[in-house]
Image (tube, rainbow, N blue to C red; front, top):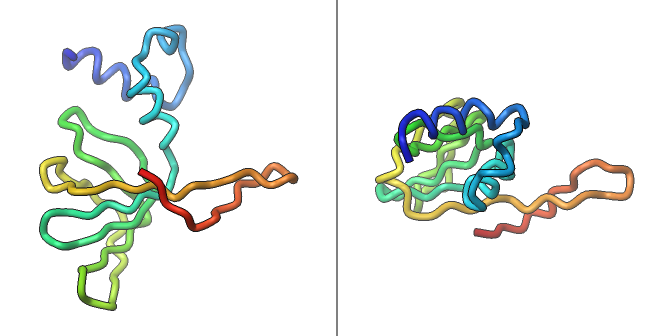
Length: 113
């Protein structure tokens, strides 16, 4: 993918356009995860739980309202907005949200890949 295509995908992620019919299933799946709570485990034994806001051109992951946990340690700290380099990411999980009858999302605390 050229840099022009990736930058246009990032800019079009917030507003639908006529090019959405031509996007790959992978891009569609990634867009569906926007504003979803992700749990990301890194190679240095840290876990970040935050709201997925997108990626940059190098595919680094951007999270906001993020908590950092160190594996084996019971404490956490609020780190706010973070950018996680793709090469440090071991595992990504998303909190599954289900709709309730009144139309609001219900977080059932289950995780999926």
